[in-house]
Amino acid sequence: MVTLSVVVPCYNSADYMRRCVDSLLLGGGPEVEVLIVDDGSHDATAEVADEYEARFPGRVRAVHKPNGGHGSTINVGLELARGRYFKVVDSDDWVDVEAFAELVSTLRRLGAADERVDMVLSNFVYEKEGRGTKRAVRFRRALPRGRVFGWDEVRRLRKTQYFLMHSIVYRTGLLREVELRLPEHTFYVDNIFAYMPLASVQRMYYLDVDLYRYSIGRAGQSVAEQVMIGRLDQQLRVNRMMMEHVARTVPPGHPAYRYMTHYLEIVCAVSSTLLLRSGTDAALAAKEALWRGIRVEDAPLHRRLRRSALGQITNLPGRHGRRVTLAAYRAAQWRVGFN
Image (cartoon, rainbow, N blue to C red; front, side, top):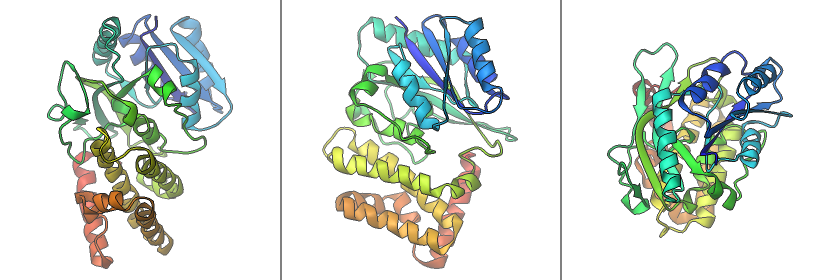
């Protein structure tokens, strides 16, 4: 039985993907399969993937497909995965080898005990190029450690804490049960991957290790601020999909509702702030349309989001209010170290 399937989405990744794949192979063993999914690259990505498959038969599979975007690589990986658990590690990121070995050991133990844990969480670290101090996002005060727990034991998280794709290992069967299918040719679908299955998660486990190393600061990355401003239509599409999902399928009394609105609050704040950073009349109109759309879809959800701390600070009125919002954003950017 394969314990863990790891999908490594690759697009023109030949210059840096080896660090990612090597960290997975060093920390894992024969019970970990690495699916390198080449998304129609134009560089040597396909050759590097084939090389790893030849060197590590049975442990690495090279998958070649026409270009369809990040979501399509995860969709293909999920179709092919043989592991009890499923994780995505982007090709420009990597894992801490010792922490990954501990994760695999934990997953093996949970599987052997037939615990049927739906989601395993761990910490991630912002690895920003040119910045000496690394910032880790940990959940020690919010989540029980060393045992299985449910949503009722998840304590309040700070605004800098949410379960990004980097934090998550899902049970493969759960993803198939909810029929997770990510949109193709769309950026920022990692939020959908992390968000859409949450209402079906019942049993969780938190492994307090700094596992995922999230590389940021490289020119041209999809999460670079100017790149995100250029792709605001896709950020807004993902934002709307998340909002509609919770509004239409997750009632306020659901155990995961409080956390899901917390996550949505952060995503709405990111969208709103980027629209303010863009500063055009069209962007300001799109911001108003975003919040108006939430109110039309679900008035109580809109009220909850607007009254939240981030909802208030990203909707301050007038030019002065916009300046205050952007000053707060720059302060958070400096403190946390995101792009």
